Image (spheres, rainbow, N blue to C red):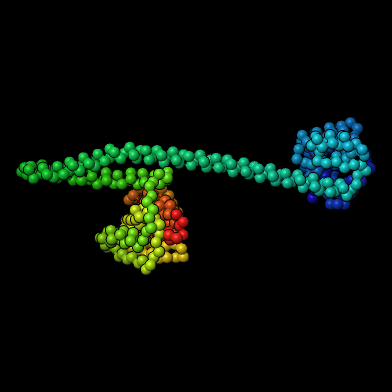
Length: 394
Ligand SMILES: Nc1ncnc2c1ncn2[C@@H]1O[C@H](COP(=O)(O)OP(=O)(O)OP(=O)(O)O)[C@@H](O)[C@H]1O
Ligand SMILES: [Mg+2]
């Protein structure tokens, strides 16, 4: 129900206005002067005010000023003496919504009131919207800041990795040379002393560990550089029409012995006449290799199957294993970079968790999608959807 404040020094006017407004379904409080009106207004929320312009003591203009100061959003309609247009205009300049002339015509007052109330409520909505827009601007700013920080971090990671690359190459090189030299020297050394022989073997073994471990480190650095370059958009892509069958079969040839050695079954089913895709052969094979590597790493029994078929205007490549599976809570996370971190206590990670994030970047760069479905303890199925060539428009 709309709540109206009627202000008039003439009792008759107050009475008539109040009666008519009540009849029309408003609720009304009437004040006999400016002072009292301000008092009421201060204590009760109103939807609109009908304010007599000419009153003894505190007049309409003054009262208007006070009311506007208390709440500028409540519309005030001035009730003016016939012919007092100049003062009415003055009132409007000071923020009154409109004016009606005395003797007040009830129908006109109703129309004006309803319009005034509607306008005020619209204004409140607009203000709220404006606030929302402001808020989303703040959010956007925060997001930009976060993105910037992420970029700084990526740039830092990339430059550190670059710095590590050169000394690491020397470490690997020297370790390899030392090991080879030592191997050559061993036959020439006296094997009289079994202790010495044992020590020399030990050194040779240690050098071997040094080579293989720093090789892993080099692999990690390459992954980081790969990822950061892709994220920064500086990675090179070589687009060509691709026969996915060839890429899959090449990867399968490499991994077949790996699976076999682990005692895992391995089967590949590729639909005949698979359409071509447009893509980067090296990158796509990187993705398939990564998923095969993971399948081998996380599957101890059973097997791995790989299939590719056309579905509408896409090729769906799916690789499933009967391995340990992935918890539902982790399924969304494993495509985020360094998702491994934090998981170190629960199960000892074999890698750093860059394989899948890189794969996702590659697949998405091809306009495709990568996802996983998995049941812990039963296995995982990775699915890659790539658009066929004619759909890509590159
Ligand atoms: N086939 C799978 N079965 C079970 N878990 C998997 C499988 N593939 C991936 N995961 C889980 O997802 C994580 C992330 O995989 P991702 O390939 O990104 O990293 P990673 O293999 O640990 O390390 P990286 O590939 O960088 O050497 C893995 O550590 C593993 O926990
Ligand atoms: Mg991996």
